[in-house]
Image (cartoon, rainbow, N blue to C red; front, side, top):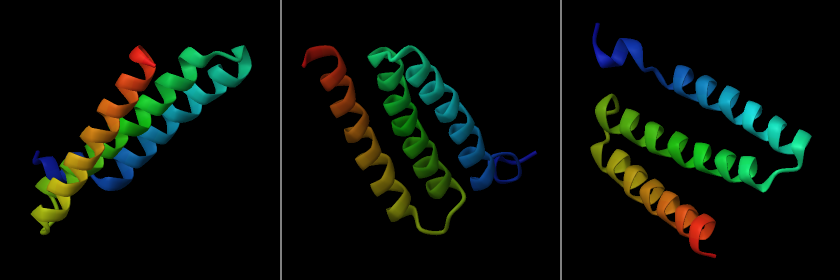
Length: 85
C-alpha cells in the first residue's frame, strides 16, 4: 500500500483530535499543567504531520515545506517554553 492510501488527511485529523481530547480531559480532570503541555505538543505534532502529508500527497510542495518549517518552529518554541521558562 502506498502512503497516499494509508495516511489520508481525515485519518491524521481524527487520530490527533482523539489524542488531544484524551490529553485535555486528563488535564482538566487532574488540573495538571503537565497534561496541558502534552496537549500543546500534540497540536505541534499534528501540524507537522499535516505538513508532511501536504508535502508528500499534495501537489503544492511549497505549502508543505512552509507548514513543516513553521510547525517545527512552533514545536521548538513550545519546548523552550515548557523546559526553560
